[in-house]
Length: 131
Image 1 (cartoon, one colour):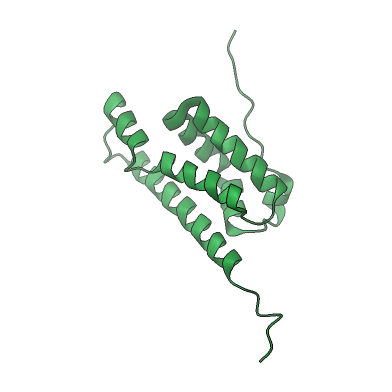
Image 2: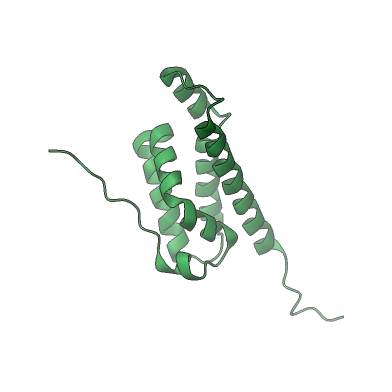
């Protein structure tokens, strides 16, 4: 008997009108993020992605909790981080292959979406200011 885990499902609100750029990015790239987290972090990596999705479902802003989980996942996925160094060494993967470049792009865009959403959220609204 073979075990096939149920793939993570993107919540409808993240597909329709995501509240932040980070919500949109995670929604569009969930499977790639989940696979990478599983490869690099095993069960704890999978749990991190599941926690992030759960938190994003329940909050339309990037709370401090979401930012902590997202930053932890970014550290795990970092192509120059220890998880990748260990994986590359153990598997004998050539970092010059196209798949590695694609993965680097995914991680860079993940980090950019997180930073952009966090920055736009921290900017005060001008609606209440008087001139």
